[in-house]
Image 1 (cartoon, helix red, strand yellow):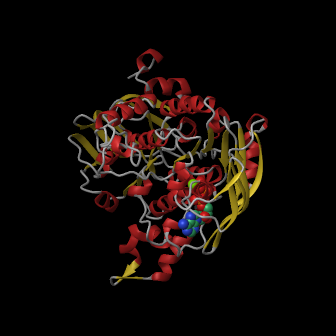
Image 2: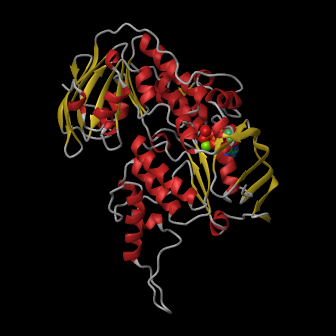
Image 3: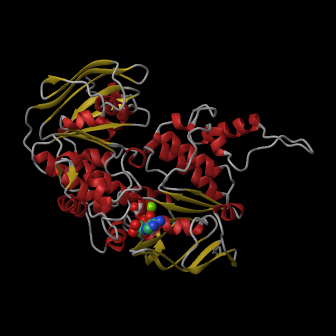
Length: 506
Ligand SMILES: Nc1ncnc2c1ncn2[C@@H]1O[C@H](COP(=O)(O)OP(=O)(O)OP(=O)(O)O)[C@@H](O)[C@H]1O
Ligand SMILES: [Mg+2]
């Protein structure tokens, strides 16, 4: 058995009002993929930040190769061979893909005295790394022009460019779909074969079982247990995480389907998507499935007025509409909860309560000023329904864990009382117990007559929740499948553009 490269002993990390970590010990070995598991707010990302020099722990020690170390900054950890893909991307939008990847360790020209940055080597290096991840983007592209998934892949390439001994990945696949994740896993396995120690965080059990060798479970900042992944069962892990059993998918509630709420006819945006037609009815959950680049989020953003539609007709409750902005859409009862909640969803430097009630300020204020008590009550109720874990709803959103920030954004839109709700990857980064709660709420809302469009890359979520699924491939609808015809293979084939062969393409 290999001995540990990195060891954390009795680590505690306290923030005002919260013990994010409370006496946690943890270690990783060469050629080991170690899963770090726990609910939203359990302390996973905090532990990562301690391991990578972002935080200095309140107490406890770190050792590298059996020698005590103290990281005074993230650079200290980097120099010692620790690379990290953080949950929140930390890239520079106005720099190119290549510059972001090699920031701080740019390849230099091989002259003896004067060693300028070699742009050529940098571009070649970037292309090589991106190739391994299956990304065909030109390395000169500015990061701000990339999609969420592409940005995430660049973040991964950036960590890989450092040839680390220890690679820490905090929810690396949350923005990727199945194919991209597979390519990442191939790469991770190769690194493992080369002796790299890997810490892997994910809320997706299939992934954990596929890739991890061992696991450590945290709950409320405390160490709960560890073991070999081979000997673990899903139920056992969930019980360690949550303290009870949970069904990953809430059973869908029967709902009577009513009239057409939204009717999209041949929607198009030049170069992005075309001929997109579908209807969603009251009481219905319409799934939208596809691989990265299929254009699902782009369709929703054009509908809601974040972007412009170039072609087609959109009707809401039978009346032709074009929304100029999400605010305009909201006034007409159509609400969009974006996928990239960090950038589009929450105001980080504002309290949880203010974030949740933000869309309803008009309703809650009397004569132009807010009624704080009522606002607070509405927010408290919504936060409770989604089990937002916080020291209090008066705290800033930026003090929350990643998953809890996402819950705040969901709570904010659910509390605004929409008639048509568009959810983009609603359970991305959300733990098992809350995922089930989100499904329960969505199902409940649909049964009350709300029309729901749910963009999701998780096939089980689509199969479990949707009444019909619109499958997209490269900007066009490849198939619309009714619930009684749902088969995993058929949906996947349609997503890969092979619908015709599976039979039943319209
Ligand atoms: N900078 C901070 N200030 C105050 N509290 C914080 C800070 N960072 C984290 N916390 C708190 O520490 C706890 C653990 O958060 P952490 O981000 O480690 O959770 P996590 O396990 O990564 O969850 P998730 O699955 O949602 O990403 C949470 O209760 C969070 O609110
Ligand atoms: Mg986290």
